[in-house]
Image (cartoon, rainbow, N blue to C red; front, side):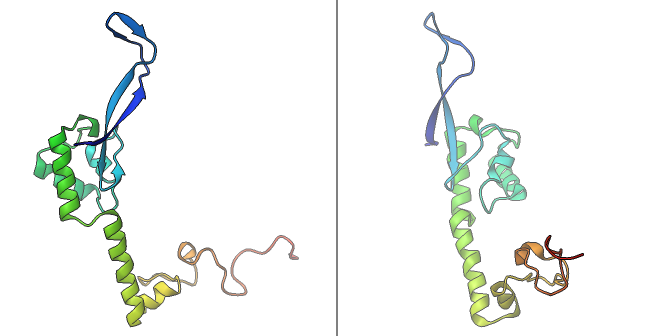
Length: 158
């Protein structure tokens, strides 16, 4: 079972049984893996990377094991291929919610035992040794912590 079918109006005029229809309905197979709808017009190795936890290298390794060409579109897959893909990804690899939960629990564990990395996470600072005197604006949320740092307000004297 592919998951669900979408019915979309076709852009071209089609003839059914001798009558011309301006908007014929076309059934398109929608491939869903781990709760994510894969984009139907992209190559399958790119489309699989829309699933959180599946990158290009893992997607290509899975496709090689199933003998599916990287240039195949998700629309062109058979139901057996879709079921095999879904089974391998959902059974053998942590993806989507399970992976997010695992990462969140690892960070919580680091905070609970009071490690340096856990403290950095709790204070919303970089955890991998980056400098913080300048840069680290993304992690800190563009907060100016010291008196002389950053831009002057428009109302101040120059």
